[in-house]
Length: 210
Image 1 (cartoon, rainbow, N blue to C red):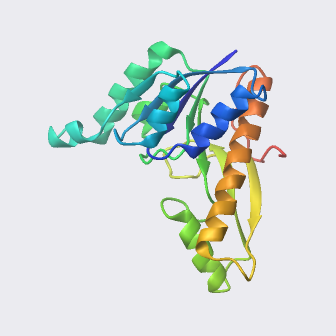
Image 2 (cartoon, helix red, strand yellow):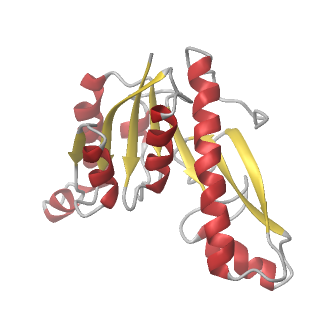
């Protein structure tokens, strides 16, 4: 059984997709042992509690107010997480870029779901930027990926990816809704691939097929 921790910062719809997959037997090899948020008002915390999953609220603000900064935050959060002995840490809408002070504690165990294709639109507002690129004739489609986390934002080796087309009748809202639905499917497929191997594979340069 693979011990999973999911990090969120908001609504937690991708967390819900994982919870649903566990509930319907599609992820029998996974055990969700903790959900972490850096925002106390994140609805994803309520989703976790309703599912009987332990939660942790770990805000950055006390660190910045004390002049400690992100490096100290990362190191302390890693120490809090280590006793849970995670086999896999999933960043699903987690709005904080981890440094090596966190990542070095969990080599090849931290993955991220990002709403853009590899090498495109790293960072925030990726969906909006993709749609604007389509409107400007600079892109024909969007997509999402699951990748290993490295200190460089959204740049780690890709585990799985999928294309989300953009049509002439699309609005930003319709494209965003379709992309989020693709994310929900992709995170479950990627997680299933990883846990069925019984251990995390080393980072790969080419994506696994989905």
